[in-house]
Amino acid sequence: MISFDGEGHDIDYQNKESMFYHIKKISDFCNIIIDKVRSKKLNINYIPENYDENMYLDLVEHSNNVVSLIRDFYNYSLRVLPTYNRFSMFLKSITFISERYAIEAYPDLKENLNSLLMLLDGEIKPILNFNIEYIEFILPKNNGLLSYIIKLQNEIFNLSVFTKHNSEFLFNGIEDEWQKYLKNNYNSLKEMLDDNAMKIIRNKTTMLNVDEKGFISKYDFNFPYFSLSEVLKSILPLGFAGCISIGSYNNNSIEIINHLYGVITP
Figure 1 (cartoon, rainbow, N blue to C red):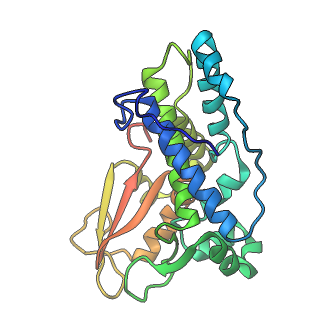
Figure 2: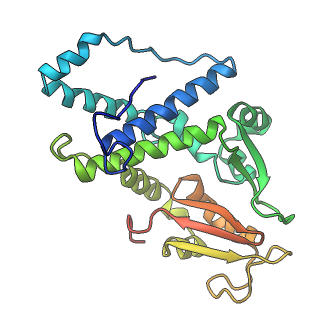
Figure 3: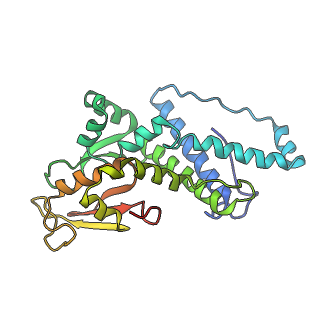
């Protein structure tokens, strides 16, 4: 938990082109998560930092310490990412996928999924308002604990991308953690991808119109009158690995966003 106000330090602190913007967002998300955990009367293992006021004076007098402090903040932030933390990896992998796929991946969830989702402020609901097999998805509730954990992870990835592109002086040779995460995940599952999955990752976005019987529009030549359940079974490994996002676009359409686009060439 930190307290930080960029105003007065950087006039662009509310602009995504400022490192302070990303640090402030991470700070806000961390504080919200800690407050939500406390409200649930759960223990959280962290050590609050008791900063001495003289520390700030020391930063002014020894500018090299500023670089060290920023590096420390960055490296501590990375520990929250699924790439480095098995708990974050677990939460990321069960979000925005079907209940059935989550239980296939983690059999122990069968008896505990509902209580886990209640704890995390998650829910199981259909991706479309049709009674179609296999599309009961696990989703975070708006402004719930799980949604803020996801926001925090995304903002740390954003900080990594920003640092890679703009802070070569401070972080010489740093990797883009978002691209690293996607490449590792794709390489771990590419042998199990079928033709339907490969169609998805060749496009930046894919829109599937679905009729009330659960079949994709016969006018879609990439998926000629396949059942939506059939296509989802093919692509859910990509969703489980965080390589794509699957969501409803309107009452009868599915939108699939391919995060691998421009990162890997299938």
